[in-house]
Length: 157
Image (cartoon, rainbow, N blue to C red; front, side):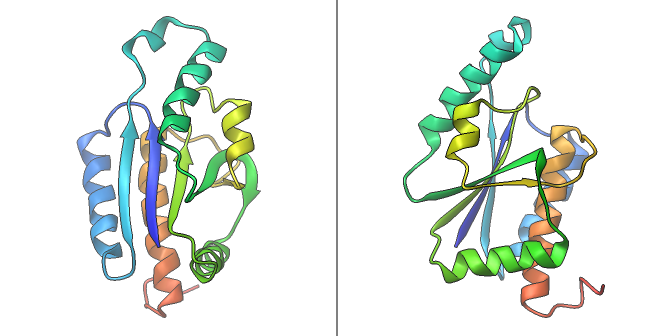
C-alpha cells in the first residue's frame, strides 16, 4: 500500500520539514509514504471561507483518483488510539487498498462534497493544531502504526 499525506497550504517551515522527512525515511522499510502539499491559489487570502473551501475542493477532487482511499483528518472525526491506527492500516492493507490518502484540510476545513467523498473521517485530537504541525504528527503516527504492526520497540505502551 502506498500512503500519501495531502496537506492544503504553504510549504512547511524548515523544522517541520526536517521532522516529516525523518519519519518518512523511517517508514521506508514498511511502506512508501509521500507528503504532497497542495498550494491554494494566491487569491485565497482575501476571499470568504466558503469560496476558499470551494476553490480547495476543486484542487482536491482534481487529484482524487478512483483507486484512492480517502481519509479526512478533522477535529470532528472519530478519535483513534495509536494501536487503533495500526489496526486500521492493517485492515486497509488486507483489503488490498492501493493508495491511502490522508487529507489535512485547509484553514477553514473542507467542503461538504470533499467530506462526502471521504471513506472515513478521523480526528487527531479535540485540540486544533497548526496544519504544518499536523503533517509532522501524521508522519509520526504512521511510523508508530507500522512499528506496532512489525513489533518494533518504538511503541511501548
